[in-house]
Amino acid sequence: MSACIEAAAPFPANVRAFTTLRHGAGTSAAPFDSFNLGNFRGDDGDDPAVVARNRAELVARFGLPAPPHWLRQVHGTDVARFDEPAGTENRSGDEPEADAAVTATRGVVLAILTADCLPVVFAARDGGEIAAAHAGWPGLSKGMLEATLAAMRTPPGDVVAWIGPCAGPRRYEVGRDVFDAFVAQDAGAAPAFAPTRPGHWLADLPALARRRLVSAGMAAADIHGGDLCTLEDPGRFFSHRRDGRSGRIATIAWLSSS
Image (cartoon, rainbow, N blue to C red; front, side):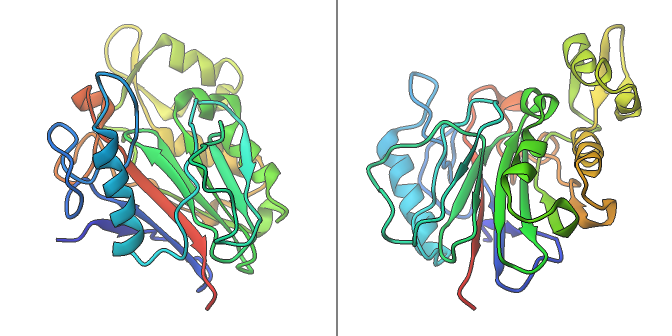
């Protein structure tokens, strides 16, 4: 059984990117079964020892050149940069508070955890730089993706992006707070919301992301993906909205040496 989905984007040959699936690897018990890579603490979290084993399996199974740089994601707009040589960086276990990461160093592995939010991988067209971002609706509305592009040394017009599995527009119902967070600052975002019942809409997160990326200078033709729904596919993806207590899939990206 496959344990990942390759990024479906025309990235340069040296850019590697994929999103893990919930099954096909790992040893987490329900409701985190089985390839949970999220190490959330507390009564609603998975066993930390099991998550550590799953993360070690991730490195071994996919032949990663180094352990990933995990982040403490907080639905903000901070971007971490990791440019030290792979294998020499700090492995104390600290996870910087950020929702995106950038690197121009070969062999440095970036990682984003999601279970409905948008995972987005960015790559310079010349293969010299990559980034990975986590954007739920709060981060997306605050400019998380724009902040990621701004943190890259590559001009936005020379960047290709892939939107990975996320809550899709046929199932992701939101309230007035989410609608207002986007439409109050950009009336043109309204078509990304389909009314359902009073005060509620189905939100198209990938469409909102594309609109913001184009406004930030990317070409629409360079933005790919966004067609895999975590809510609709319990066999492959975790979903916090659908399941409440849920594991996390990971979107992984790195620059290879060949």
